[in-house]
Image 1 (cartoon, rainbow, N blue to C red):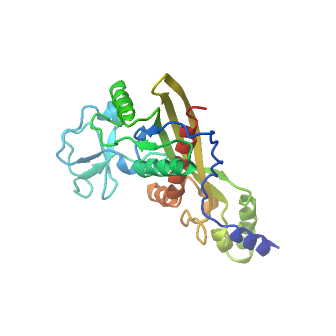
Image 2: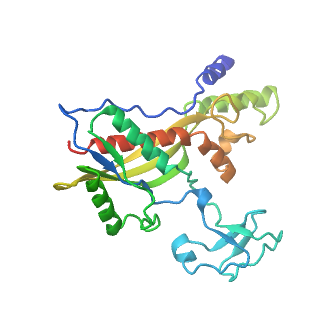
Image 3: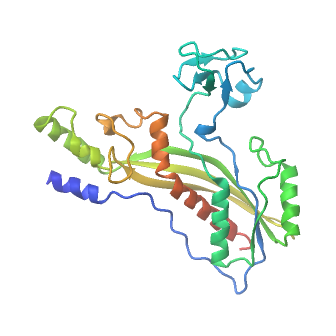
Length: 304
């Protein structure tokens, strides 16, 4: 019976699926054109955290803006306390490259331009608007660290009007993170499998457990937006949490988080940055599609 349950669990292994997109609510005639402003991200991807080289002066805003109290060597992960001005070579291995230490949660990189372009394609296919315009995303006045300033918003509105748009969608990705959502219903089966394996094979050696997807990981994205009626003023705003999830095992055939001895009891505490990046890499493509679909639903709220 135990083997039957295990094989049933393995048969259910599957990658993440994008959230279904409800059918469009079309009016008798298409609505006036929609313009989509650049998608701005407020948090920083873990891979993009601040870097320094030996000999660099410590930026005066390091503690205030970035929260840096130390940096770690990229080569050996030895930490150097700040301020140490200029930054000395690594005392452990002599390397010159440093970065801010990794902290949870892991924040995946997001291709904002691709997600926005995908949203525009979906909106055009759904036919709710006469046209869909993507505003230029290379405006030098847009500083993601400062957010969307009134000056940037004014430029967007004028550009949208010049292109004949009636509606302006201003999306903001406030946060994107990867986390363990839950240990799912297969967790109890893994406990039983561990006990049986410890009796008949060897303590803490549970090979069947390595393939049972008992942990649900996800990319959680918090999307906020503002819709403006360029003829008559504000049109509304909203926020949506997008969760892209899948069930993970130690080893394939489905999504994997990497192998650890009795990992199902130790996770997520046993995971380091490389492990989180491995998990994220199996979710981010679908998470980008979910983000695009979230933009579609936000845009189609204009004029309702």
